[in-house]
Amino acid sequence: MLNIVIFGAPGSGKGTQSEKIIEEYGVEHISTGDVLREEIKKRTELGKLAASYIDEGDFIPDSLMIKILASVLDAKGKDIKGVIFDGFPRTIPQAEALDEMLAERGETVSVVIGLEVDGEELINRIVLRGKTSGRADDNEHTARHRLENYHNMTQPLKKYYIEEGKYVSVPGKGDIDEIFSHIKEVIDAVK
Ligand code: AMP
Image 1 (tube, rainbow, N blue to C red):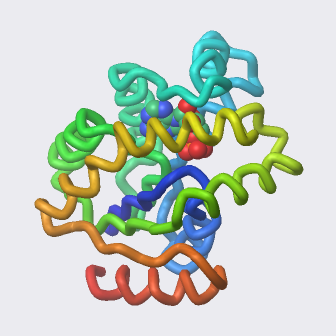
Image 2 (spheres, helix red, strand yellow; image 1 turned 180 degrees about the vertical axis):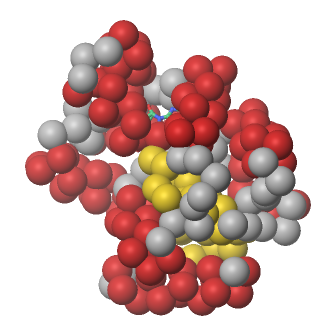
């Protein structure tokens, strides 16, 4: 199975490139942000709790996030070509949990694609996206806080995956199709 982690700061293009990867490779999409936003839309208890974190640009606690991921992954079943993990893991405990969950299924992370985009470009993209996304967290103030959390809690994962020999960096600035052709080379080398 092809288990791809798409990794990068908020606004780095993870969602956009995930869509192209799904179309090309027929893998399943697990976007934890989408899962949480769906719960918010349905006004479930989980959604209410999630909104209290998301709207402030804070992370959902690891223990809860790991449980959600496990149940979404289980729901995909066994008869799938692979998964693209978009927005998970975001912390070292989440990465360790993902390794364990996949190992229980006889699987491993195939590759981690790190989309590299610099800070001000990220803020500009998020503010622009906020004009149409309807997301309460797509504004400059919250975006800056999300970036801080990314640097403090998510960035250390880069080293974690470099040490596992799984991290491949891809420049995330420029033409969407050019970025995708770079990603394709990376995935074709591991599949
Ligand atoms: P995203 O759509 O991936 O940018 O996620 C939007 C928001 O959902 C994040 O800013 C977090 O508040 C929350 N979230 C999504 N995935 C995770 C995760 N793996 N761990 C903690 N919080 C998450």
